[in-house]
Structure formats: structure tokens, C-alpha cells
Length: 161
Image (cartoon, rainbow, N blue to C red; front, top):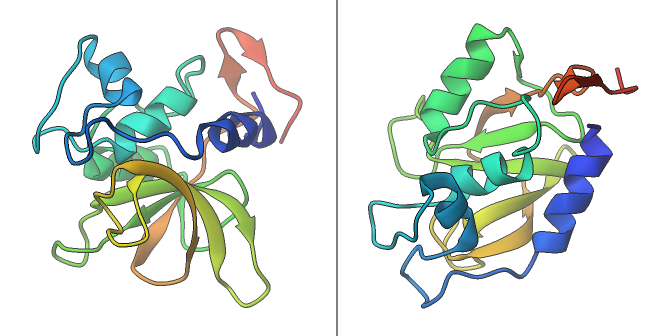
């Protein structure tokens, strides 16, 4: 699977919202937990990203942004500069080294800002907003996890390097 194929899936999800608002009840959590869940214990930004990659082995299946960062670091696939298709990790409210939000890089602007597609965000809440949105980001970025898009998808190799 290529970065563009994953991004096409993500773009189709823009506008999806949890229901009711503020509940964390959303299809990505239902897929991740294999049952419907709701409440503050179930933020879903990472579940959304895992859902995008559900037919691949390119990311760790986890609901924890910090666990995903650790996994990419262990794979030696964690970077300070973005590429389209990278997973971007943010820190909005924890000690500076802890990731508390995740998105996927949709495009990179010449000024260093990036457009992302993120789950569980909004224009009024960066990291717990209840919708899938395309966001413009430049600050609070910890780093980037780069899926090995040239790796396998259910045993098949992708053509992308």
C-alpha cells in the first residue's frame, strides 16, 4: 500500500464525527476495541490512524500515541523532517517529550507548515475535538513516524520506495 492510497482513505473520512458529541463513540473505536465504547477513557486519534492502516502491517495497532512513537523509534523510522504520508506526533498538554495526539501528513508547505488529516480534533480542540479534519500545523510537533510503504500489505509488496 502506498502513502497516496492511505491518504485517499483518510480524505474520504474527513467530516466523520463522534456521536453524540463529546462521547468518543465513533466507528474507529468500535473497530479497535471490537465493541462500541464511549467516554473519556477512549480518545480516538490513534485508533483512527490504525483504522486507516488496518489492512497493512505498516503501523503498530495501538490506541496510545506514545506507544506508537516508541514503536517507530525502535524501528529506526522516527524523523524530525516530514514526508507526505508520515504520521505526525504532537504534544499539546503533557510533558514535552510525550505524544498526546497523532495525524497523517497530507501535504507540506514551503514555509515548513504541514497539512494533516487527524481524527478526534476540531477547530476549538487540538487533541480531543470529536471529528476527522484536515488541519494546518506548524507547532507542538514532536516528530514523524515513517511507515515503510515499500513493505508488505498482507504479504504483497508495494512499488513505492
